[in-house]
Length: 242
Image (cartoon, rainbow, N blue to C red; front, side):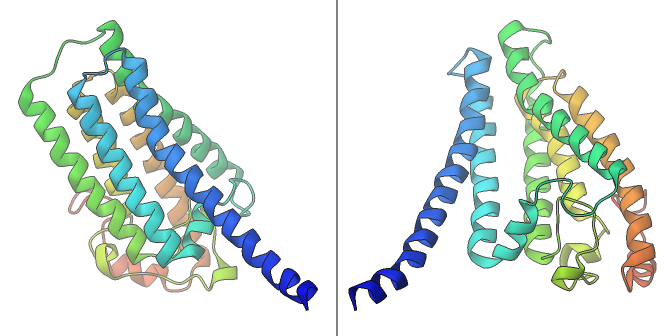
C-alpha cells in the first residue's frame, strides 16, 4: 500500500513543483526587467521609470496569470520556441528582429536618462504616452482573452483546431494585438520622456507591418473562412487607414 500511495503522489508532487517553478520564473521576469531598467538609468528616483515599470509588471502579470489559470493551452502556445511551429524562415527572421528591437526599446530610455542624450520632453507628451500605454494595454489584453489561437509564431494550428475569430476586438481590426503593441511602442518612450526610445519602437512597428503582410498571405491561403473575415473586417491595423 505505501508503494501505491507513493507512486500516485509522485506525479502530483512533480506537477506542483513544475507549477511553482513557472510561477517563480514569471515573477522574476516581470520584476527583473523593470528593476534592471531602473538600475541602468542610474536614478532610483526616476518617477516615470517607476510608473512604467509598475505598468509593465501589472499588465503582463495579469496577462500571464490569466492565461495560466483560464487558458493554459494558449500560454503553452505563446511559450512555443520559435522555429518549432513549422513557420517560414522569413517569419522567424522577423520575430527575432522584433525581439531584439524590444530589448532596445525597453532599455534605451534608461541609458538616455543616464547619459542625457535627449532633453526632457514636455509634460503633455508624457501624459499622451500614458494614454497610449493604457489604450494599447486594453487591445493587448482583450486580444489574449478573445483569441485562444494567439500564437507568437505565424502558423496554422491544426493541432489545436485553428479557426477564424471575428468577435470582440477582432471585429474592430484584424490584428488588434499588433495595434495594442504599436500603441505601447510609441507610448512607452513618450511617458519616459525619451526621444531615443522611439527609434527602436518605430523600427519594431515597421517590422510588425511586414509581418502582418506575410501572416495574411498564409491565413488567406490556409485558414478556412479568413477571406470572408477580411471582407467583414476591412482594416488590418488602423480603422479607415490600413
